[in-house]
Length: 553
Image 1 (cartoon, rainbow, N blue to C red):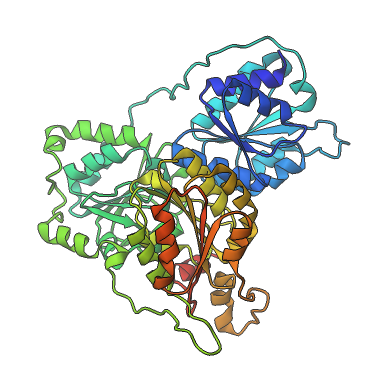
Image 2 (image 1 turned 180 degrees about the horizontal axis):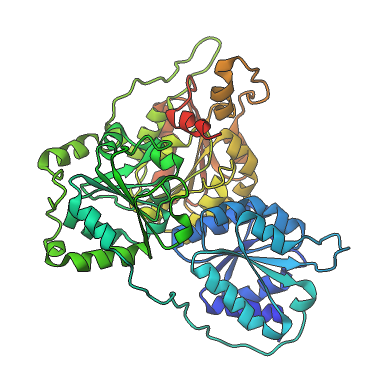
């Protein structure tokens, strides 16, 4: 059996059911081996899109995302998506054909490339092909982004046949976390708040039980939006996207426990969200994460769910009083519950509509908040929202509700514009039972529009909403007030809906809420063709989250 065939069988044996990529001579055989084993190949228009599809699939499905590309330029084309995945600790495996001869025009230093973006590197050997593929998949399944080097000469070598099945990926040996300092902090707190991050995405149930036991309020970083959806004590996203009520309550906390969150500048508004007098505890499986963004008073090493369960066990009978709550915290009162119901969502925060009516010299433009609220009313609750990067990004992140943590795909660790459409496609493959919404700016759409070809091929329920301000809005609002020329970042108005129709999608231009009629029709139909909404949004001022972002530059 050829090495390429062994690799394909091992990965499929581990559960790889989808592989995203662009096929060339270097990855032809390993991709076909995966397909022959039973995986489905999703052909992207570009390797950069394929990388983001694998990333979005992994985040939404909770399984390893598999990416297959050509040697040399296929790998480098995928590099931005690979970097986003590595910085987000996405479980993803890149099958990277490798030209090992230094004088080959396809040669790149794959180990150095992987290390430069924070990914792990493994290489397949002819004599240990199954073992090497197995080890790479296991590393990815435990939360790493892995580059698997497949030397071209090795792929064609004959090796020992392998028929599987693969052994299940075992969790690392359990070590009882040392939770005494956390227990003491919880016992002393009157106003505790839990902030759950990316590392807590699988720990909703133990965290909510622990919060009930100690009277904590619940919040999340943007990467974990939806984790506590439906919980009456959920404050939603902390940081730049926090509602005024969430900011007030987090600021009043005397204890903040960060569960799988490093409390970066976005989550803490550059440290200003958390009171200086508050005790800060960080729980993370990686000791290297402790204190990387701000000092912490207590650090607890361990998987989030395991630590929460250990604390619950130590609390004993007090932890079993059930979700009626009250606990030791003292601020889970009926009055606060009512405030959270009335003011805990951005939909309930008043604003002045800044939609621009049509004039003789300019057509109408819709306030992005008004657009987002209207979309939230129109779209089915069972949805996945994938958000690209850019000035617009807060509007869908704050105004569009999601049903759970798998319903929000937020590729912002590298802050690259242009990843949102492809990551939405990966999410749609993972959850075809839900409507997937790709929220993009016009700059990100133009960068990635070629993947509409892929969207049409897949015929999945996909809605693309473009917040179109005819500019790179972040730069307009950052540099414009200081009098800098903006010709490099502003553009003529373009009919993006027409471009989408050219790719085979349905498309509509929206300037007012009344223009959403075709979207209502599309939602009522079979949704087998993607719908693209080119929303011409007003852009009179920059967003407050943008001001926070540029403070970090």
